[in-house]
Image (cartoon, rainbow over all chains, first blue to last red; front, side):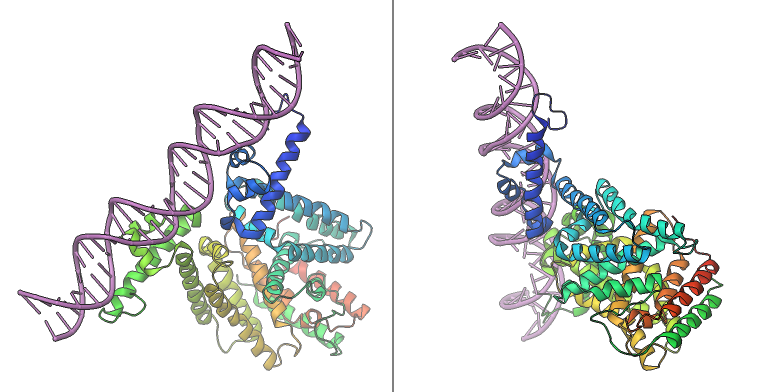
Length: 228
Length: 228
DNA sequence: CTACCAAAATGATTTTAACTCATTTAAACT
DNA sequence: AGTTTAAATGAGTTAAAATCATTTTGGTAG
Protein backbone atom coordinates (compact mmCIF):
# COMPACT_ATOMS: atom_id res chain seq x y z
CA UNK A 1 0.00 0.00 0.00
CA UNK A 2 1.13 3.52 -0.72
CA UNK A 3 0.76 4.39 2.91
CA UNK A 4 3.49 2.03 4.07
CA UNK A 5 5.71 1.14 1.14
CA UNK A 6 8.31 -1.32 2.33
CA UNK A 7 9.82 -2.55 -0.87
CA UNK A 8 9.27 0.40 -3.12
CA UNK A 9 11.14 3.58 -3.36
CA UNK A 10 9.00 6.20 -1.75
CA UNK A 11 9.94 8.69 -4.45
CA UNK A 12 8.27 6.80 -7.28
CA UNK A 13 5.08 6.31 -5.34
CA UNK A 14 4.92 9.97 -4.47
CA UNK A 15 5.65 10.92 -8.05
CA UNK A 16 2.65 8.92 -9.20
CA UNK A 17 0.55 10.32 -6.42
CA UNK A 18 1.25 13.87 -7.48
CA UNK A 19 0.83 13.02 -11.14
CA UNK A 20 -2.67 11.85 -10.34
CA UNK A 21 -3.17 15.02 -8.35
CA UNK A 22 -2.00 17.14 -11.27
CA UNK A 23 -4.35 15.38 -13.63
CA UNK A 24 -7.21 15.71 -11.18
CA UNK A 25 -6.62 19.41 -10.72
CA UNK A 26 -6.57 19.93 -14.46
CA UNK A 27 -9.73 17.95 -15.14
CA UNK A 28 -11.60 19.31 -12.13
CA UNK A 29 -10.71 22.88 -13.06
CA UNK A 30 -11.76 22.21 -16.62
CA UNK A 31 -15.01 20.38 -16.09
CA UNK A 32 -15.95 21.04 -12.48
CA UNK A 33 -16.41 18.33 -9.89
CA UNK A 34 -19.54 16.78 -11.36
CA UNK A 35 -18.38 17.09 -14.94
CA UNK A 36 -15.07 15.39 -14.26
CA UNK A 37 -15.11 11.63 -14.66
CA UNK A 38 -12.67 9.60 -12.64
CA UNK A 39 -11.93 7.71 -15.83
CA UNK A 40 -10.92 10.99 -17.50
CA UNK A 41 -8.63 11.82 -14.62
CA UNK A 42 -7.13 8.34 -14.77
CA UNK A 43 -6.51 8.69 -18.48
CA UNK A 44 -4.97 12.13 -18.05
CA UNK A 45 -2.64 10.63 -15.46
CA UNK A 46 -1.86 7.62 -17.70
CA UNK A 47 -3.16 5.26 -15.12
CA UNK A 48 -5.98 2.76 -14.84
CA UNK A 49 -9.17 3.82 -13.17
CA UNK A 50 -8.67 1.45 -10.27
CA UNK A 51 -5.27 2.92 -9.54
CA UNK A 52 -6.83 6.22 -8.59
CA UNK A 53 -8.70 4.43 -5.84
CA UNK A 54 -5.45 3.01 -4.57
CA UNK A 55 -4.31 6.49 -3.71
CA UNK A 56 -7.60 8.15 -2.83
CA UNK A 57 -10.56 6.61 -1.09
CA UNK A 58 -13.06 8.19 -3.46
CA UNK A 59 -13.69 11.12 -5.75
CA UNK A 60 -14.45 13.47 -2.87
CA UNK A 61 -11.21 12.51 -1.20
CA UNK A 62 -9.33 13.24 -4.41
CA UNK A 63 -10.95 16.65 -4.58
CA UNK A 64 -9.99 17.34 -0.98
CA UNK A 65 -6.39 16.51 -1.82
CA UNK A 66 -6.39 18.86 -4.81
CA UNK A 67 -7.93 21.66 -2.81
CA UNK A 68 -5.69 21.03 0.17
CA UNK A 69 -2.58 21.21 -1.94
CA UNK A 70 -3.78 24.46 -3.48
CA UNK A 71 -4.17 26.17 -0.13
CA UNK A 72 -0.86 24.84 1.12
CA UNK A 73 0.88 26.29 -1.91
CA UNK A 74 -1.02 29.51 -1.45
CA UNK A 75 0.28 29.76 2.09
CA UNK A 76 3.86 29.32 0.91
CA UNK A 77 3.37 31.92 -1.81
CA UNK A 78 1.82 34.37 0.60
CA UNK A 79 4.68 34.06 3.03
CA UNK A 80 7.10 34.67 0.20
CA UNK A 81 5.14 37.69 -1.00
CA UNK A 82 5.32 39.47 2.34
CA UNK A 83 8.34 41.53 3.31
CA UNK A 84 9.13 40.62 6.90
CA UNK A 85 10.38 44.10 7.76
CA UNK A 86 7.62 46.14 6.16
CA UNK A 87 5.03 48.01 8.18
CA UNK A 88 1.75 46.31 8.97
CA UNK A 89 -0.14 48.30 6.38
CA UNK A 90 2.37 47.40 3.68
CA UNK A 91 2.24 43.75 4.62
CA UNK A 92 -1.53 43.78 4.48
CA UNK A 93 -1.36 45.34 1.06
CA UNK A 94 1.08 42.70 -0.08
CA UNK A 95 -1.14 39.92 1.21
CA UNK A 96 -4.22 41.54 -0.26
CA UNK A 97 -2.67 41.90 -3.69
CA UNK A 98 -1.30 38.39 -3.60
CA UNK A 99 -4.58 36.93 -2.44
CA UNK A 100 -6.78 38.73 -4.94
CA UNK A 101 -4.39 37.95 -7.76
CA UNK A 102 -4.18 34.29 -6.86
CA UNK A 103 -7.88 33.65 -6.50
CA UNK A 104 -8.54 35.48 -9.75
CA UNK A 105 -5.92 33.48 -11.58
CA UNK A 106 -7.03 30.15 -10.13
CA UNK A 107 -10.68 30.91 -9.78
CA UNK A 108 -11.79 27.44 -10.80
CA UNK A 109 -9.73 25.74 -8.13
CA UNK A 110 -10.96 28.17 -5.50
CA UNK A 111 -14.52 27.39 -6.52
CA UNK A 112 -13.82 23.72 -5.96
CA UNK A 113 -13.12 24.53 -2.34
CA UNK A 114 -16.82 24.91 -1.76
CA UNK A 115 -17.39 21.39 -2.99
CA UNK A 116 -14.84 20.00 -0.58
CA UNK A 117 -15.64 21.96 2.53
CA UNK A 118 -18.86 20.48 3.84
CA UNK A 119 -17.65 16.92 3.71
CA UNK A 120 -13.98 16.70 4.43
CA UNK A 121 -12.39 18.18 7.49
CA UNK A 122 -8.82 17.81 6.44
CA UNK A 123 -8.78 20.59 3.90
CA UNK A 124 -10.17 23.02 6.41
CA UNK A 125 -6.87 22.76 8.21
CA UNK A 126 -5.03 23.97 5.16
CA UNK A 127 -7.37 26.90 4.75
CA UNK A 128 -6.96 27.66 8.43
CA UNK A 129 -3.21 27.55 8.01
CA UNK A 130 -3.52 30.05 5.21
CA UNK A 131 -5.61 32.60 7.10
CA UNK A 132 -3.06 32.46 9.91
CA UNK A 133 -0.79 34.45 7.64
CA UNK A 134 -3.24 37.31 8.07
CA UNK A 135 -3.50 36.74 11.80
CA UNK A 136 0.27 36.89 12.21
CA UNK A 137 0.51 40.18 10.35
CA UNK A 138 -2.22 41.70 12.46
CA UNK A 139 -0.88 40.36 15.73
CA UNK A 140 2.53 41.76 14.94
CA UNK A 141 0.88 45.10 14.17
CA UNK A 142 -0.77 45.05 17.55
CA UNK A 143 2.43 44.04 19.32
CA UNK A 144 4.34 46.82 17.64
CA UNK A 145 1.71 49.39 18.51
CA UNK A 146 0.76 50.00 14.90
CA UNK A 147 -2.72 48.76 15.65
CA UNK A 148 -4.88 49.20 18.74
CA UNK A 149 -4.57 46.59 21.46
CA UNK A 150 -8.21 45.67 21.19
CA UNK A 151 -8.18 45.18 17.44
CA UNK A 152 -10.69 42.38 16.76
CA UNK A 153 -8.42 40.38 14.50
CA UNK A 154 -10.88 37.55 14.02
CA UNK A 155 -13.59 39.86 12.77
CA UNK A 156 -11.24 41.80 10.56
CA UNK A 157 -10.12 38.52 9.04
CA UNK A 158 -13.67 37.95 7.86
CA UNK A 159 -13.79 41.50 6.51
CA UNK A 160 -10.53 40.98 4.68
CA UNK A 161 -11.10 37.59 3.09
CA UNK A 162 -14.83 37.97 2.71
CA UNK A 163 -14.47 41.23 0.84
CA UNK A 164 -11.68 39.96 -1.38
CA UNK A 165 -13.52 36.78 -2.29
CA UNK A 166 -16.74 38.59 -3.13
CA UNK A 167 -14.80 41.22 -5.04
CA UNK A 168 -13.04 38.53 -7.02
CA UNK A 169 -16.39 37.00 -7.88
CA UNK A 170 -17.69 40.36 -9.05
CA UNK A 171 -14.62 40.95 -11.18
CA UNK A 172 -14.91 37.49 -12.73
CA UNK A 173 -18.60 37.95 -13.37
CA UNK A 174 -17.94 41.14 -15.26
CA UNK A 175 -14.91 39.77 -17.04
CA UNK A 176 -12.62 42.29 -15.40
CA UNK A 177 -8.98 41.66 -14.51
CA UNK A 178 -7.20 42.28 -11.24
CA UNK A 179 -8.13 45.70 -9.86
CA UNK A 180 -5.75 47.20 -7.37
CA UNK A 181 -8.29 49.71 -6.16
CA UNK A 182 -10.21 46.88 -4.54
CA UNK A 183 -7.29 46.11 -2.28
CA UNK A 184 -6.56 49.77 -1.60
CA UNK A 185 -10.15 50.51 -0.67
CA UNK A 186 -10.30 47.49 1.55
CA UNK A 187 -7.14 48.57 3.34
CA UNK A 188 -8.32 52.10 3.81
CA UNK A 189 -11.50 50.73 5.28
CA UNK A 190 -9.67 48.33 7.57
CA UNK A 191 -6.67 50.26 8.71
CA UNK A 192 -8.02 53.75 8.26
CA UNK A 193 -5.25 55.05 6.08
CA UNK A 194 -6.18 56.05 2.59
CA UNK A 195 -4.35 56.17 -0.65
CA UNK A 196 -5.28 57.25 -4.12
CA UNK A 197 -6.76 54.25 -5.81
CA UNK A 198 -6.12 53.88 -9.50
CA UNK A 199 -9.37 53.04 -11.22
CA UNK A 200 -11.78 54.41 -8.66
CA UNK A 201 -13.16 57.88 -8.42
CA UNK A 202 -10.68 60.64 -8.89
CA UNK A 203 -10.76 64.17 -7.65
CA UNK A 204 -12.90 65.36 -4.81
CA UNK A 205 -10.80 67.20 -2.28
CA UNK A 206 -11.40 65.07 0.72
CA UNK A 207 -9.83 64.94 3.99
CA UNK A 208 -10.74 66.88 7.00
CA UNK A 209 -14.39 67.35 6.41
CA UNK A 210 -14.89 63.78 5.29
CA UNK A 211 -12.84 62.37 8.08
CA UNK A 212 -14.85 64.38 10.54
CA UNK A 213 -18.05 63.16 8.98
CA UNK A 214 -16.88 59.65 9.29
CA UNK A 215 -16.00 60.03 12.92
CA UNK A 216 -19.28 61.71 13.68
CA UNK A 217 -21.26 58.96 12.13
CA UNK A 218 -19.25 56.32 13.88
CA UNK A 219 -19.66 57.97 17.23
CA UNK A 220 -23.31 58.64 16.73
CA UNK A 221 -23.79 55.05 15.87
CA UNK A 222 -21.86 53.91 18.88
CA UNK A 223 -24.31 55.70 21.09
CA UNK A 224 -27.24 53.94 19.49
CA UNK A 225 -25.61 50.55 19.76
CA UNK A 226 -26.10 50.34 23.49
CA UNK A 227 -29.02 47.97 23.18
CA UNK A 228 -28.12 44.80 21.28
CA UNK B 1 -47.75 20.14 -19.24
CA UNK B 2 -47.35 22.31 -16.17
CA UNK B 3 -46.05 25.14 -18.32
CA UNK B 4 -49.27 25.62 -20.30
CA UNK B 5 -52.17 24.07 -18.40
CA UNK B 6 -55.25 24.52 -20.52
CA UNK B 7 -57.66 22.20 -18.87
CA UNK B 8 -56.35 22.12 -15.35
CA UNK B 9 -56.84 24.54 -12.59
CA UNK B 10 -53.58 26.37 -12.24
CA UNK B 11 -53.88 26.40 -8.46
CA UNK B 12 -53.66 22.64 -8.03
CA UNK B 13 -50.67 22.35 -10.29
CA UNK B 14 -48.87 25.11 -8.44
CA UNK B 15 -49.75 23.54 -5.11
CA UNK B 16 -48.09 20.33 -6.16
CA UNK B 17 -45.14 22.23 -7.56
CA UNK B 18 -44.50 23.97 -4.28
CA UNK B 19 -45.08 20.81 -2.28
CA UNK B 20 -42.27 19.22 -4.28
CA UNK B 21 -40.20 22.32 -3.67
CA UNK B 22 -40.87 22.12 0.06
CA UNK B 23 -39.83 18.51 0.16
CA UNK B 24 -36.73 19.23 -1.89
CA UNK B 25 -35.69 22.06 0.37
CA UNK B 26 -36.09 19.88 3.41
CA UNK B 27 -34.16 16.93 2.02
CA UNK B 28 -31.46 19.07 0.42
CA UNK B 29 -30.94 21.02 3.63
CA UNK B 30 -30.81 17.78 5.56
CA UNK B 31 -28.54 15.71 3.36
CA UNK B 32 -26.87 18.19 1.03
CA UNK B 33 -27.18 18.09 -2.72
CA UNK B 34 -25.22 14.89 -3.29
CA UNK B 35 -26.66 13.12 -0.29
CA UNK B 36 -30.24 13.85 -1.29
CA UNK B 37 -31.82 11.22 -3.51
CA UNK B 38 -34.54 12.28 -5.89
CA UNK B 39 -36.47 9.24 -4.73
CA UNK B 40 -36.30 10.55 -1.16
CA UNK B 41 -37.59 13.91 -2.25
CA UNK B 42 -40.38 12.26 -4.21
CA UNK B 43 -41.39 10.21 -1.20
CA UNK B 44 -41.30 13.26 1.07
CA UNK B 45 -43.60 15.01 -1.39
CA UNK B 46 -45.89 11.94 -1.65
CA UNK B 47 -45.30 11.72 -5.34
CA UNK B 48 -43.76 9.21 -7.72
CA UNK B 49 -40.17 9.74 -8.77
CA UNK B 50 -41.13 10.40 -12.36
CA UNK B 51 -43.48 13.17 -11.30
CA UNK B 52 -40.57 15.24 -10.04
CA UNK B 53 -39.18 15.24 -13.56
CA UNK B 54 -42.50 16.51 -14.87
CA UNK B 55 -41.96 19.71 -12.95
CA UNK B 56 -38.18 20.02 -13.05
CA UNK B 57 -35.87 19.05 -15.85
CA UNK B 58 -33.35 17.46 -13.54
CA UNK B 59 -31.93 17.48 -10.03
CA UNK B 60 -29.87 20.60 -10.68
CA UNK B 61 -32.92 22.42 -11.92
CA UNK B 62 -34.80 21.44 -8.80
CA UNK B 63 -31.98 22.80 -6.68
CA UNK B 64 -32.00 26.04 -8.64
CA UNK B 65 -35.70 26.39 -7.95
CA UNK B 66 -35.21 25.83 -4.22
CA UNK B 67 -32.37 28.31 -4.06
CA UNK B 68 -34.17 30.83 -6.22
CA UNK B 69 -37.23 30.74 -4.04
CA UNK B 70 -35.08 31.24 -0.96
CA UNK B 71 -33.49 34.41 -2.30
CA UNK B 72 -36.81 35.76 -3.50
CA UNK B 73 -38.27 35.32 -0.04
CA UNK B 74 -35.17 36.86 1.46
CA UNK B 75 -35.67 39.93 -0.70
CA UNK B 76 -39.26 40.30 0.48
CA UNK B 77 -38.19 39.89 4.10
CA UNK B 78 -35.41 42.42 3.73
CA UNK B 79 -37.71 45.00 2.26
CA UNK B 80 -40.10 44.45 5.14
CA UNK B 81 -37.30 44.75 7.68
CA UNK B 82 -36.19 48.16 6.49
CA UNK B 83 -37.89 51.34 7.66
CA UNK B 84 -38.38 53.49 4.57
CA UNK B 85 -37.95 56.73 6.48
CA UNK B 86 -34.89 55.82 8.53
CA UNK B 87 -31.48 57.29 7.87
CA UNK B 88 -29.08 55.41 5.64
CA UNK B 89 -27.01 54.17 8.53
CA UNK B 90 -30.07 52.83 10.31
CA UNK B 91 -31.28 51.12 7.18
CA UNK B 92 -27.92 49.49 6.68
CA UNK B 93 -28.01 48.24 10.22
CA UNK B 94 -31.47 46.83 9.68
CA UNK B 95 -30.39 45.08 6.52
CA UNK B 96 -27.20 43.82 8.15
CA UNK B 97 -29.05 42.38 11.13
CA UNK B 98 -31.69 40.81 8.93
CA UNK B 99 -29.13 39.36 6.56
CA UNK B 100 -26.84 37.89 9.19
CA UNK B 101 -29.77 36.49 11.11
CA UNK B 102 -31.30 34.91 8.04
CA UNK B 103 -28.17 33.26 6.72
CA UNK B 104 -27.37 31.94 10.18
CA UNK B 105 -30.85 30.51 10.56
CA UNK B 106 -30.93 28.99 7.10
CA UNK B 107 -27.29 28.24 6.71
CA UNK B 108 -27.81 24.96 4.90
CA UNK B 109 -29.94 26.52 2.20
CA UNK B 110 -27.44 29.32 1.73
CA UNK B 111 -24.71 26.73 1.31
CA UNK B 112 -26.74 25.12 -1.44
CA UNK B 113 -26.49 28.35 -3.39
CA UNK B 114 -22.91 27.52 -4.22
CA UNK B 115 -24.01 24.29 -5.80
CA UNK B 116 -26.50 26.06 -8.02
CA UNK B 117 -24.51 29.06 -9.12
CA UNK B 118 -21.99 27.74 -11.61
CA UNK B 119 -24.54 25.92 -13.70
CA UNK B 120 -27.80 27.74 -13.73
CA UNK B 121 -28.18 31.35 -14.66
CA UNK B 122 -31.70 31.85 -13.47
CA UNK B 123 -30.97 31.85 -9.77
CA UNK B 124 -28.32 34.50 -10.23
CA UNK B 125 -31.13 36.86 -11.07
CA UNK B 126 -32.75 36.28 -7.73
CA UNK B 127 -29.52 36.88 -5.87
CA UNK B 128 -28.99 40.00 -7.94
CA UNK B 129 -32.47 41.15 -7.05
CA UNK B 130 -31.61 40.68 -3.40
CA UNK B 131 -28.39 42.67 -3.42
CA UNK B 132 -30.27 45.50 -5.10
CA UNK B 133 -31.88 46.13 -1.74
CA UNK B 134 -28.44 47.20 -0.55
CA UNK B 135 -27.82 49.25 -3.66
CA UNK B 136 -31.07 51.14 -3.23
CA UNK B 137 -30.26 52.04 0.35
CA UNK B 138 -26.84 53.29 -0.65
CA UNK B 139 -28.08 55.19 -3.67
CA UNK B 140 -30.69 56.91 -1.58
CA UNK B 141 -27.97 57.81 0.91
CA UNK B 142 -25.98 59.39 -1.87
CA UNK B 143 -28.97 61.22 -3.29
CA UNK B 144 -29.82 62.62 0.12
CA UNK B 145 -26.28 63.75 0.71
CA UNK B 146 -25.76 61.35 3.60
CA UNK B 147 -23.02 59.68 1.61
CA UNK B 148 -20.44 61.21 -0.72
CA UNK B 149 -21.30 61.45 -4.38
CA UNK B 150 -18.44 59.19 -5.37
CA UNK B 151 -19.30 56.38 -2.98
CA UNK B 152 -18.28 53.16 -4.75
CA UNK B 153 -21.49 51.31 -4.05
CA UNK B 154 -20.49 48.20 -5.97
CA UNK B 155 -17.32 47.72 -3.99
CA UNK B 156 -19.01 48.40 -0.68
CA UNK B 157 -21.60 45.81 -1.60
CA UNK B 158 -18.84 43.22 -1.72
CA UNK B 159 -17.51 44.48 1.61
CA UNK B 160 -20.97 44.23 3.14
CA UNK B 161 -22.10 40.84 1.92
CA UNK B 162 -18.64 39.30 1.81
CA UNK B 163 -17.96 40.21 5.40
CA UNK B 164 -21.35 39.06 6.62
CA UNK B 165 -21.15 35.75 4.84
CA UNK B 166 -17.67 34.98 6.11
CA UNK B 167 -18.64 36.11 9.58
CA UNK B 168 -21.64 33.83 9.50
CA UNK B 169 -19.40 30.94 8.53
CA UNK B 170 -17.06 31.71 11.40
CA UNK B 171 -19.93 31.88 13.86
CA UNK B 172 -21.37 28.59 12.60
CA UNK B 173 -17.97 26.93 12.75
CA UNK B 174 -17.59 27.89 16.37
CA UNK B 175 -21.16 27.07 17.25
CA UNK B 176 -21.88 30.68 18.16
CA UNK B 177 -25.26 32.37 17.73
CA UNK B 178 -26.05 35.68 16.08
CA UNK B 179 -23.58 38.34 17.20
CA UNK B 180 -24.67 41.91 16.80
CA UNK B 181 -21.15 43.24 17.20
CA UNK B 182 -20.32 41.81 13.79
CA UNK B 183 -22.90 44.05 12.16
CA UNK B 184 -21.92 47.05 14.27
CA UNK B 185 -18.24 46.69 13.47
CA UNK B 186 -18.99 46.27 9.81
CA UNK B 187 -21.10 49.43 9.83
CA UNK B 188 -18.52 51.38 11.71
CA UNK B 189 -15.98 50.71 9.03
CA UNK B 190 -18.40 51.18 6.14
CA UNK B 191 -20.59 54.15 6.91
CA UNK B 192 -19.06 57.50 6.25
CA UNK B 193 -15.91 55.80 5.12
CA UNK B 194 -16.62 56.71 1.54
CA UNK B 195 -13.84 59.27 1.56
CA UNK B 196 -11.42 56.47 2.14
CA UNK B 197 -13.34 53.90 0.22
CA UNK B 198 -13.60 56.03 -2.87
CA UNK B 199 -9.87 56.34 -2.87
CA UNK B 200 -10.34 60.02 -3.33
CA UNK B 201 -8.45 61.11 -0.27
CA UNK B 202 -5.02 62.22 -1.33
CA UNK B 203 -3.36 61.00 1.80
CA UNK B 204 -3.12 63.89 4.19
CA UNK B 205 -0.79 62.38 6.68
CA UNK B 206 -1.98 64.29 9.77
CA UNK B 207 -5.58 63.53 9.00
CA UNK B 208 -4.92 59.88 8.68
CA UNK B 209 -3.00 59.73 11.89
CA UNK B 210 -5.70 61.67 13.61
CA UNK B 211 -8.28 59.30 12.30
CA UNK B 212 -6.22 56.37 13.44
CA UNK B 213 -5.99 57.71 16.95
CA UNK B 214 -9.67 58.37 17.13
CA UNK B 215 -10.45 54.96 15.77
CA UNK B 216 -8.26 53.46 18.44
CA UNK B 217 -10.28 55.00 21.18
CA UNK B 218 -13.48 54.03 19.47
CA UNK B 219 -12.37 50.48 19.18
CA UNK B 220 -11.67 50.45 22.88
CA UNK B 221 -15.20 51.62 23.50
CA UNK B 222 -16.54 48.94 21.25
CA UNK B 223 -16.73 46.03 23.58
CA UNK B 224 -16.11 43.73 20.71
CA UNK B 225 -16.75 40.13 21.43
CA UNK B 226 -13.85 39.64 19.07
CA UNK B 227 -12.06 36.40 19.46
CA UNK B 228 -8.43 35.64 18.73
C1' DC C 1 19.94 -16.23 -14.12
C1' DT C 2 15.81 -18.03 -12.23
C1' DA C 3 12.55 -18.50 -8.77
C1' DC C 4 9.93 -16.29 -5.57
C1' DC C 5 7.06 -12.89 -3.23
C1' DA C 6 4.78 -8.85 -2.08
C1' DA C 7 3.47 -4.43 -3.70
C1' DA C 8 1.26 -2.10 -7.39
C1' DA C 9 -1.63 -1.82 -11.22
C1' DT C 10 -5.37 -3.27 -14.01
C1' DG C 11 -10.04 -3.24 -16.02
C1' DA C 12 -14.13 -6.20 -16.07
C1' DT C 13 -17.84 -6.36 -12.90
C1' DT C 14 -20.96 -4.60 -9.43
C1' DT C 15 -23.61 -1.02 -7.45
C1' DT C 16 -26.05 3.06 -7.14
C1' DA C 17 -28.79 6.71 -8.35
C1' DA C 18 -30.33 9.89 -12.02
C1' DC C 19 -33.30 9.97 -15.63
C1' DT C 20 -36.77 7.94 -19.33
C1' DC C 21 -40.94 6.26 -21.22
C1' DA C 22 -44.70 3.02 -22.19
C1' DT C 23 -48.67 2.56 -19.62
C1' DT C 24 -52.30 3.78 -16.36
C1' DT C 25 -55.17 7.01 -13.90
C1' DA C 26 -57.59 11.26 -13.34
C1' DA C 27 -59.80 15.37 -14.92
C1' DA C 28 -62.26 18.31 -18.07
C1' DC C 29 -65.49 19.09 -21.49
C1' DT C 30 -69.35 17.70 -24.52
C1' DA D 1 -71.56 8.25 -20.57
C1' DG D 2 -68.08 8.80 -23.65
C1' DT D 3 -64.18 10.98 -25.48
C1' DT D 4 -60.03 13.44 -25.17
C1' DT D 5 -56.22 15.41 -23.19
C1' DA D 6 -53.40 16.21 -19.10
C1' DA D 7 -51.04 14.22 -15.22
C1' DA D 8 -48.96 10.59 -12.72
C1' DT D 9 -46.70 6.29 -12.25
C1' DG D 10 -42.81 3.06 -11.49
C1' DA D 11 -40.36 -0.57 -13.91
C1' DG D 12 -36.59 -0.19 -16.96
C1' DT D 13 -32.38 2.09 -18.92
C1' DT D 14 -28.11 4.34 -18.52
C1' DA D 15 -23.95 6.25 -16.80
C1' DA D 16 -20.53 6.74 -13.74
C1' DA D 17 -18.45 5.71 -9.09
C1' DA D 18 -16.47 2.17 -6.59
C1' DT D 19 -14.85 -2.75 -5.99
C1' DC D 20 -12.03 -6.75 -6.42
C1' DA D 21 -10.23 -11.01 -8.54
C1' DT D 22 -6.51 -11.25 -11.56
C1' DT D 23 -2.18 -9.82 -13.77
C1' DT D 24 2.09 -7.30 -13.93
C1' DT D 25 6.06 -5.30 -11.93
C1' DG D 26 10.14 -4.87 -9.35
C1' DG D 27 12.86 -6.04 -5.76
C1' DT D 28 15.36 -9.98 -3.19
C1' DA D 29 17.57 -14.26 -2.52
C1' DG D 30 19.32 -18.80 -3.72
